[in-house]
Image (cartoon, rainbow over all chains, first blue to last red; front, top):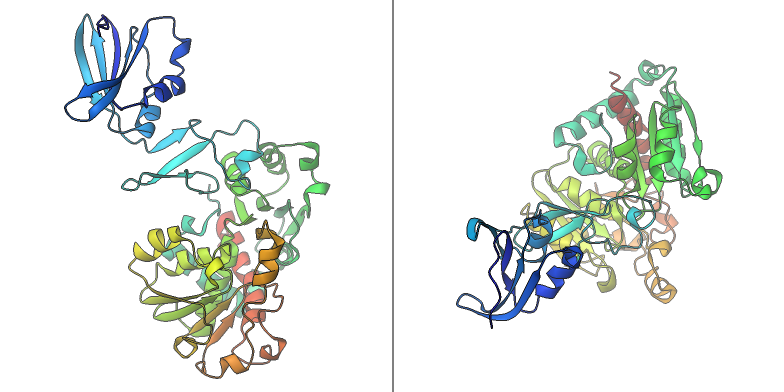
Length: 138
Length: 304
């Protein structure tokens, strides 16, 4: 299967197989006015199977969001057909308005215009807790 | 500006300093009786609590200050749909310091982020109640003369009991503390408290559902009420509410200098026949609450 290479844009690589669509939706990539390719179940030496997203436009990608979903994802920045920057997403120390606190007793369930903030409290176990009620994110 | 939202906001040194000031207030009440002349405390109680509110109000009055506020959400602008952020900005124009209780967890933190005056968390749902913890620490220090080298039995609702969680957090920072965790299986201490606090701080702990099993080892026995408001299911509450009832018989094997504590109000978990036992410290604990709140108000207002 052939997918055109991109001239200027972003390649989100090493996505866990079948997670590509989730990232596409969370990053609101459907709102972009450029070509976006989602390749699912591509062969990978490292992972066996993986998903890849290619975005044919240079735009500011939400790295915190990607790191939160899967810190093993690689982000490649392409300029003039060449990869000019390559980095791993990592678990962000804090995520804002990416997830919603599920605790019905939390102030976030009542207070208008309050950001949903989660803090990374345990890197090893990848535990995030609500900034306000400290309930862990499931 | 300094607020008190969570007991973890205070260092051990700051806690010790508050205890020292509280002890000085107890010894020299007159010296402190005009320290807050002209200052106003706002008690914003979005859910009812008689003892905590009155304790704060008595504390401010004994410092010579005045008190304004409300004692339920029905009598505040919250009933008109006002946010906590807006309420706190308005109250900051009237008061020098705020004590706030709210049924929603994290509400006092939201308030502190917007407030122009110090905010004290006077209880947010099942989450934090740091002035209760300070009260407990002052009581332990006054009753036992130390905050180190103690075996502490915590009994009752260890799952939802915020006072227990905060006390474990606070006491885990002192040397040679051991916990005996006494609860029915359904109300055991949450795993994250074991993992994040007890294991992380290498604290020795034992779980049991028998209140008498380790009675002879305890320096402190901290009883708690099974709180109806924390249950979604009334059947579970009814089944568990009288699981432990401390009475004279159960205290037979206890140390002569055991200190029995309870955050109050109690229902049935301590029989009234224990009240006359000199080891029953729970009413002295209430009084300590006023003194530690006086010390806290002075600290947050920057008054020496």
